[in-house]
Amino acid sequence: AQSVTQLDSHVSVSEGTPVLLRCNYSSSYSPSLFWYVQHPNKGLQLLLKYTSAATLVKGINGFEAEFKKSETSFHLTKPSAHMSDAAEYFCVVTGNQFYFGTGTSLTVIP
Amino acid sequence: DGGITQSPKYLFRKEGQNVTLSCEQNLNHDAMYWYRQDPGQGLRLIYYSQIVNDFQKGDIAEGYSVSREKKESFPLTVTSAQKNPTAFYLCASSKDQRRRVPNTGELFFGEGSRLTVL
Image (cartoon, rainbow over the protein chains, first blue to last red):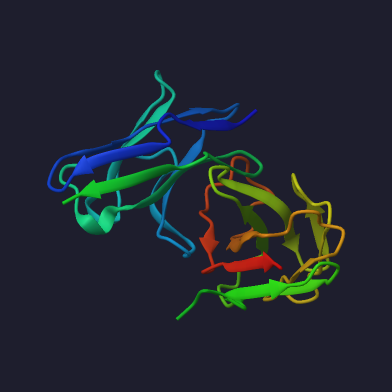
């Protein structure tokens, strides 16, 4: 069975400091994993995806994520937060369907 | 540009009324999905369709209906049987993944429709 757990429902960082959003997954298969971002009253936009190629995946807007099979994790990072990064972030794992985490709300403090 | 268009963006409904949310895509994707989003609950799957004239119930299909008469269109009707319809509704599409598990293609989302019951 597939599932995903986002370990923090809310994360606050100061502008210019690193961002870490944590995601653990469970999958019966070799998984495909995604991170999406959602700004208020908007749809979800793909940040990056892992589909069994390189374990360090680079995405848009300076975000990246590392697939660690031994830890069943796919944490999202960014070296320096920007005010525009404030949004909701979703980790997704796929099997025969797409399985969403409950989201992490990122606040960026000026 | 290719993408997914949802309409209307905001919709108000009186108790006992059915409403239909539109979803159109020009990405030539076979699969389309409807999700419901409530605060703190992430996205929950209502219905999905992997091919024209076929669709499947998701986790919370009660009180909703869909049709898939054209590849480009996947409208969602929120019926009066849906007890708590106030929510943000998201339509998405992806390439055909029926013969591949796990799915490797990503979901593409529309901008969403916010339904409020008065």
